[in-house]
Image (tube, rainbow, N blue to C red; front, side, top):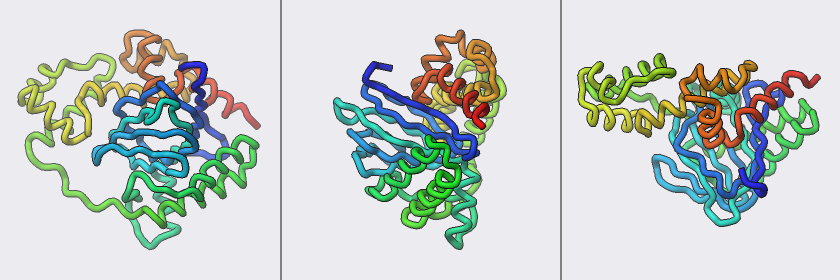
Length: 279
């Protein structure tokens, strides 16, 4: 990360189920990845360029980015000076609970549009960060819920029921994902994986990309980083974490982790440790 860039990815113990990121990025670019929960980002400077399955979005100050769980996306600077933002990463269960309180809908909450101009929501998201920084648990929790409720009322809904994936390709993709998850430390080649599933490598590649928005190798890297995050949160040292998730060494973990999460694994682990130790 260059000297002009800064990032803090952390948790406030009084806001369980929520990660916080405040950052300014210039050269940093997030590769294609997904999140288990939601991404709610308030752009406060510059321009962020986000590539989603629906196309490219450019977001400047006053804009709010809302990305639903498991949606593959990339992000990078849209202007030479980069972009600055404050991000909330609430768990899916939290957003569903808030949606159930503020609307009559039941089921999985879903943001209908990925980007909106909403300066008031930007202010609320920044206020969550400020309250957490001050250790004001009541304010942080209150404003967090106000921000999410506001966005759900204006831009949310319920994820439509989707038919179970059918066809040999969809079934092969789902089974391939299970195998990669189970054999993360020693995954098969694409050809071996396809042979095990009784299909061809290119057919499997097409089916996997259609199902999960990225090819198997990119999905595996993302999955390794997500598992590494859980291990680091539990206090596992980065070198041990790298071996457990299948990276060749700690620098290999560091490169991919920093690209996807936005901070190095050591800094990520320290923030989690600090959060547990704060009274």
